[in-house]
Length: 103
Image 1: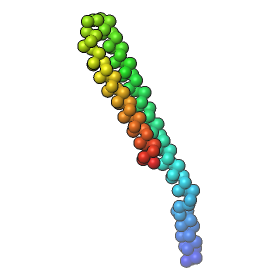
Image 2 (image 1 turned 90 degrees about the horizontal axis):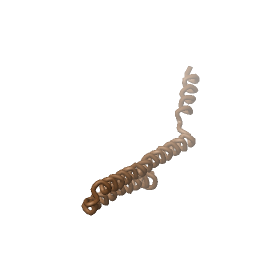
Image 3 (image 1 turned 45 degrees about the vertical axis):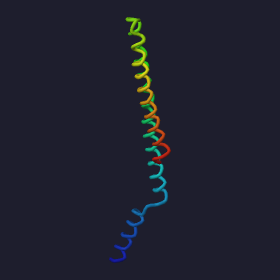
Image 4 (image 1 turned 180 degrees about the vertical axis):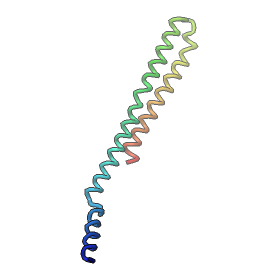
């Protein structure tokens, strides 16, 4: 009876004991999640391009309607461009941090 219980305990211990392959699988899973997160953060770089395009298209439309306001509207257009590009740089920075720092 004791021998049967001891063999069952030994069999369960071999099933529960972590192996080197389990550690490798965990490492692959963590690295894969890290790359997926960096890819998701890098996908946000394309979104500010829409903001830049909208900023300049609105500026051209406003200048076509009222040419005398061109000098007053240009600083606002440049400000919108700069803020949109700053957003793109921040998302790129987050993606690079995700890849190289948080690994």
